[in-house]
Image (cartoon, rainbow, N blue to C red; front, side):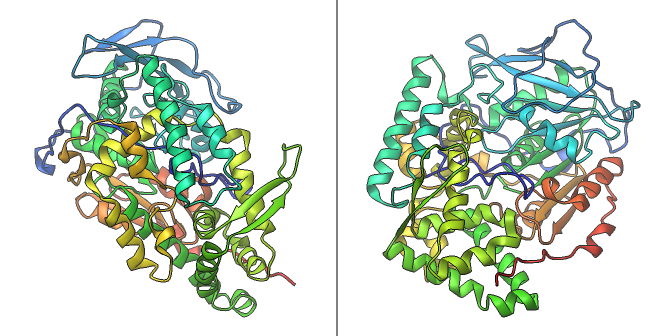
Length: 536
């Protein structure tokens, strides 16, 4: 069952896993690729203007910024002194600029040092469907606002936008599927039915579902920069936000000083096939690290083969167990099949130290640790009513599925995991039932140009994690190959979105925004693999 790419979290945070839904729609605005040297942007280090909101509304084209209260947040907000907030109002569909208008929540966090550099950083959230203003703590924990203001804007349709295209009923449905076989046709039919109800809710509110996509979101950010009277800013995107950042810098390069992307998903590759590639690379990174650590290899020999054998065995003969989940009054039945096991590990690479032990316990007949993590992510209150399914399906179904067949997804999985049954391979990890979902979502395809590579000489930092099973580590160098002034870095032993979990990645990112053509990567030399848990 499709899900937005999970937001990163430290190992102590609750694991959020795979069965939450999301995918689909269309782009109504044509794209035009710009060759790198034809793009117009100020050189790195050129003077720029800090956003000074004041109390006066400002207009840029058809967009209007209105200072006001800070946006609502899905989690308790971190303490921030003197944030500057408001809303950006834009056309829902720019092909109808005088039609319906929507608002996007904006919050600007001041630089911690009190003397900000003139060029702020704008944060592009993941998902698709996560809300940037709910990721403020993640950015501040990494010191991103050390000496620059950081701007957070809710992408269209997300939690603090109006309309907010979240759908708690769909989230609640996915939370009730723990005892179902993941890849069964009956599960697919129930999932599509629940998604269709979500779609009907949105269209009943007059929402133009075809206007929630990357092209419109990129234009929203271009309008925000102009409405805030910022001459030049920096961009930092995580997870799906890297897809959006690459699209934004291709379509609206004006005023961009530098771009950092972390957990890279290039628009030209986005879909199920590259997700299978990410799964292979992330799993191999973790399994190889265990094999190189003598204590882990001695206790859990040939972990890769054990895991792949378990996927096939559980797909043929699923196991049902009952676990206790915090916040749930009654024990919860959980069915583990091959598809669940693959999706569990895709997210569990964030908890790498415990993965070998969990797999070993399952191999010896104890599925409880894996079942508890799988159920805990799906039943967490944080999984209900937060993700914008309207935006997520808008992106998936207009920009991804029209340019990738179901057969290509299955074949990509088969080439990388030849021992897996077809019933597992048919659904890319975290992206199950995408084609069936998109037929129900029923929005037009984006122009084919949405899949073009981004070619640019804007300075760029391209970050990947060696344990990333959600966006392929190899996608970083791929994206960097057409960014002529880029620095590509793979941080070993870290999962999806290294800025969330690695002090080294945070240091590299901060140094990049100080000197975009020469970030300090010296901390990479001292990194060590995790000490894997060794069971008695």
